[in-house]
Image 1 (cartoon, rainbow, N blue to C red):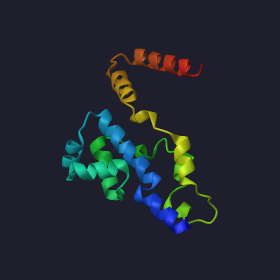
Image 2 (cartoon, one colour):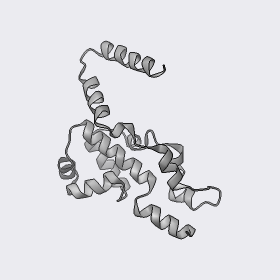
Image 3 (spheres, helix red, strand yellow):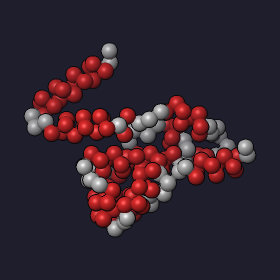
Length: 150
């Protein structure tokens, strides 16, 4: 497969950075217990457009990202948090650079599914933030971190 065909194939699924940003939109929307329809209404969009953003099939422009940050009550940097280095290297600027060797299929196989997209993780985060005693919440957090290092 030629380099141009490979680039065309990868973008038909969405650039990995757009997919990451979309997954962060979905994560925050889900944590707020907000439907795609409600988010769409707040932004003047259809829920189908929100779906496309969340899947990374449509890129989110700067002004729309600003609106999303305001509606979802997060800083813009939230959408780029936890981005893996391999994903960051797949920006159009880096892809077009001769210095970067690019292997999308291999990268996707090693990344696996994002654990923050699992129902249990979302439920755990919601439950954690419902704990009114923040000292207790901090102790629980410390316990979980301690147990995860075993």
